[in-house]
Image 1 (cartoon, rainbow over the protein chains, first blue to last red):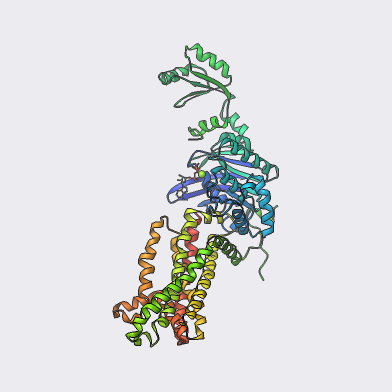
Image 2 (tube, rainbow over the protein chains, first blue to last red):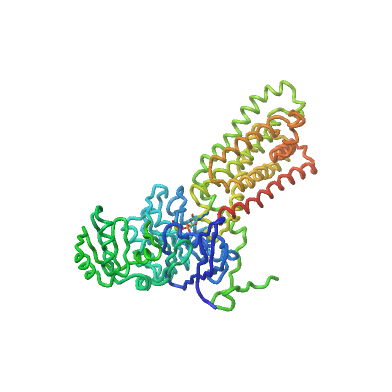
Amino acid sequence: MTTALIRARGLTKRFGGFTAVDGVDFELNRGEAFGFLGPNGAGKSSTMRMIGCVSPPTAGELTIFGLDPVADGPAIRARLGVVPQEDSLDVELTVRENLLVYGRYFGLPRPVIRERSDRLLEFVQLADRQDDRVEPLSGGLKRRLTIARSLINEPEILLLDEPTTGLDPQARHVVWDRLFRLKQQGVTLVLTTHYMDEAEQLCDRLVVMDAGRIAAEGSPRDLIERYSTPEVLELRFDPAVHENAAEKLAAVPAQRREVLADRVLLYVADGDAALAAVRGLGLDPLTSLVRRSTLEDVFLRLTGRRLED
Amino acid sequence: MAAPAQPRGPAAGLAWPARPDPVPAWNFAVRQLRFWLTDYRRTWRGSIISTVLNPLLYLGAMGLGLGTLVDQHGTASLGRVSYLIFLAPGLLAASAMGTGVGESTYPVFGSVKWNKTYQAAVSSPLRPADLFHGHLLFVALKLTMTSAVFLAVAAMFGAITSPLAIAALPVAVLTGLAFTAPIEAWTVTRTKDTSLAVVYRFGMIPLFLFSGTFFPVTQLPVWIRPIAYLTPLWHGVALCRDLCLGIATLPSALLHVGYLLVVLGAGIIAGDRSYTRRLYV
Ligand SMILES: Nc1ncnc2c1ncn2[C@@H]1O[C@H](COP(=O)(O)OP(=O)(O)OP(=O)(O)O)[C@@H](O)[C@H]1O
Ligand SMILES: [Mg+2]
């Protein structure tokens, strides 16, 4: 018995012989902001497309609003908003015409679309560009229009596949702010991202996906507590001595040590004490930084890869 | 009486409302038709010009110009009508084919590959087959308009001699659609636009030349005629011509229409499947 808004059990997607999503389980409740975090090819988009009812699952169970995505696709999609990974705007039409055309797909009457378009264009700060053709707009403006378009049917669930990839920092903050407001209004958010700060800012709960499977699940804070240490000491050495230094660092008591191409990370409870120990070994890093653990560290631990690779 | 829809699966008896009444498919198709009409608003000026200009040029150059020469050599094989009168209904059907093929290639390819408007549309309540049917409705409207203009221009040239010619309008529309549906079913599966040129080079142009538009198929060698009879264009040309000349008989009309309907129906079945396969991956 469940009242979960979205529920997946053993959800699987295969393309030919290749398994893109390999039996994942998750549940989402109304009003939550839920994130899929994972490297390229992890199966995030494939999962999102199955939830969006445009990709029939190969195996497993999936219900959205308690309905079956294959049999009840139109009824489910009428209540979803979708921001796909790749923009699919009609670049020949104007900004406002894109909203009009899309609103019509939902069977909305013209005056309703007009009124909502006014509000949405304000919301994503595109009101002054409303009569411009979409083609020459910058990537960030197109992304904002895609978000506005996904809201034209006042969806209960908003699916966002990498909503801010390719945006400059300022545009990302605008998008985050808007998504946060939607969440406040009770819209359920499902998003994928490569950005840990995005996940930390927006998600109540997230899953880390790798190679089609869920490697871990929890709130950002949970995950950091479970899979990382309170502090991280980041050390950068002269490239000439980088490897040698990395080996010597094994002597410093740390829960874990990650040797990256350009840095060494020491996972410890007390970063300053660890730094003192490093100096005590006679090592002299070019730079050192003590910081708190982030999702990036969780990610590195779980997948052996960095998030933005 | 249909029983009210029961909630199913894990939702049964729980907080979820019963499934909403499904929206009828024609309603979804009309929503997509309206998209194409919005799209057409950008290009209609250029399109209207060629709609009027094409019949003027063809009927002027070939019907009158070439026709004078042909008529001097006797018109027995044309059924004892002037070349202009022979040609006009053939061109009506052939230009419907041209419109039908044109609409089923680049606009469809663009929607799935360049602009990805189809991918956007399937995230709305519309299903792939609704997109297909909506486009067919749009093409039917466009064919009705271009064919009506063609008939009007032909009448101005004095190429129409029977009131039955009005029935050639739906036949021309059907001829165009008999090309649109199957070609569109194929186009939507394409990944490279270069393959579309094949339709024109090896499909449309040979049909245009050898399906009885410009000369009776009986002028072709005996062994090749059956091939001409198999093409949808020949059926469209033959029936349009019989109607415009006022010599159509019911059995032959039913045969031609039946053939075109079978091709259209097969195209719709194929398109429903290929749209779904392409857009639901
Ligand atoms: N239509 C398809 N046909 C074949 N393979 C596919 C198809 N779509 C996705 N895949 C494969 O499935 C795997 C998962 O792809 P998916 O797009 O879900 O990853 P992702 O986590 O969204 O990655 P990214 O971060 O790069 O967007 C990839 O290896 C991809 O190549
Ligand atoms: Mg993706």
